[in-house]
Image (cartoon, rainbow, N blue to C red; front, side):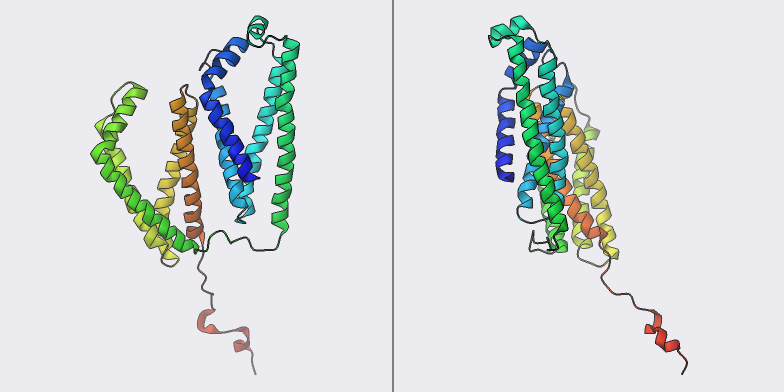
Length: 311
């Protein structure tokens, strides 16, 4: 079911990006008098609904591998918002009048007939709400099950985090070489195209410094995940750096999705995917950092209460 929903939502999102100019011109502008790109919240809400639904359904696919029931929670939250958004869209079509002359030219129907189209998103909202109830029942059922659900990956958590740190250190090293070879010029060109001014040399130097810092904290992850409890403090710099990077990616995602052009929306989708993957890795590293020592505590001198009993 998760795979079918993923393909359906992904297909609808691709169709929306392909037909986005027609939607703006024929629906928003001609029928409701909303000029293209004049209301960024409309673009942001539409893009966020599609993109977060894709990610939530992707997590639903992983639940099929018996990972953990908590992967269902983002799906429930996101699609509760989608139900409200579909219901609001249906009420908008039913209640808000449109330009009758434009409606006659475009569809050749009366406004009263056009209002019937408002029942379509409401019906979809009811169907999605029914599916939401089914997924919630599955969430509750998995919580009441006594069977262990830690069969996601045969690797130990510490070993997996060390592999993640090593791979990210290699990627950061390659990125540093590419940055000084060509990437800094590409960033300067894109910055000039978006902002309209040249990026400062200090900003490019700060980017290179962040890449070097990423290499260092990834090496600390390899060392911190291999030792005892005191070594896990070495994971803190990684958590801080990549946590800040995740927040920055999410903020940039909201900014790019509020813009007008298709290329900027694709950039926002890539930033959201990067934030999602980073958040998954951040959760794994945090689980290792939060683990306590498994060594049993013993009383001083190994004495028990029987030692002090008088004969």
